[in-house]
Structures are given as structure tokens and as C-alpha cells.
Image (tube, rainbow, N blue to C red; front, side, top):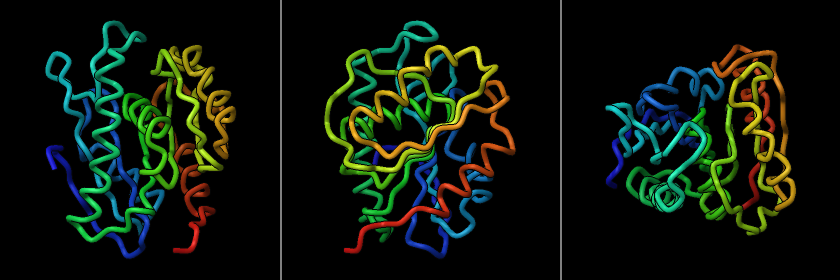
Length: 203
């Protein structure tokens, strides 16, 4: 498993794969994760791309123009990591939910779009559309929570996210918050409620 990561075990079968924003690390979302899912396993992962020393999950050319081959290859690697981590730590591979913030939300979206079989759902906090070409792989009702900030300077680039997810069949809950790019208490409340409502198919 060639990702730097940190696992905090919980008492349930749910595992949140925590994907940080630019400049964060595998610990950045641990407190948020425990707040929204007190009993879940929390698996924080560090992005493998560096931008002036700041960890990210994929390279970018400008603030909103991304290295597409790198984005897709890292999204695939992240999906593979789910299976490896499940085997290594005895976690339920069918109950991994991606929880990503900003850059982490974008890699989660790319991974989900191309490798939906790896995921039981996703929480996308302040995402934008990272993919130049969006796949048409059916998501078959996969649950996705999207929260955006009305005052976020990136918000115009987030506009395609929910329409795309709905078009490929995701079960999307979306919220536009009175906030900027930063996370708020409302993000935590909405995420906790959404996670609490998740149900998983019987094995």
C-alpha cells in the first residue's frame, strides 16, 4: 500500500476514507470524521502530488486546469487502495465511503465516476468538476452528498458536478450553504445526518 495513511478504528463496519484539501495530510479530517461518524473506522490518506511542498492528490496547471492523465491514474490508484486496505486491516470493502474536502473531493469524484464498484458512497465537500471528459458509467443509485459554499470563489466551477452525478444515476443530496470555501458547522451537521441515513445492501 504505497499511500501514506492513518487508521483510527471504530466500532461499526463503515469506513470513511478521508481525503484532505491542498496542503493537508492524512490527519486533517480526522476530527471532522469523528464528529460526523462517531463509530466509523477513519482512514486518512495523504495525496502523493506535491505543489511547492503542499500535498495534493493530483497535479494542476492552474487553479482550475488539471493534469487529466494524472487525475485519472491517481483516482484509479485510490480505488485499488480501498481493496488493499480492506484486506490489510480486516475492513468491509463494501462499506467504504469517500469523504473529501476541496482537492480531496475532486479526487473522490474522479475515482467514483470511473470506479464506482470501489465505493459505497461519497461526501463531496466544496468540489469542482475536475474532469474534462466525464464518463458515462452508471452509478446505479450510489448515494452522494454535495455541499457547496455560495460565497466560494470556486463555486462557478462546481456547477457541473451535481447535474453530472444525476445524469449517470447517482442518488444525490445537495446543499448550497451560506459560506465560502471553508468548512462550517453546517457541513458537519449535514454530513452526520446523511451518514446516519445510509443503508447498505445485504451481503
